[in-house]
Image 1 (spheres, rainbow, N blue to C red):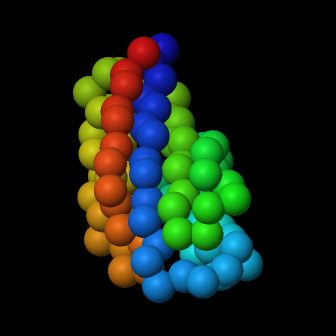
Image 2 (cartoon, rainbow, N blue to C red; image 1 turned 30 degrees about the vertical axis):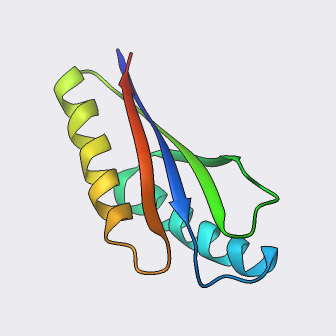
Length: 93
């Protein structure tokens, strides 16, 4: 069993409220869950209206597949128009 995990740091520059941030983050989390069948949660910076940190996890039977899914998640988030990917860290256990 292999677990792919990823910590994504996002910048939401055009946002001016926590309510607006929640809308962007919830939409992104839902799309990641539906498209890649991953677990997603906001893990840090919950009170910062312009920054979000998401944790993503995926369980599979091969290391290569875990890495492939994490790469696809990063590419998808990087192409997001309302939030910019500032930093990420991938770990395969």
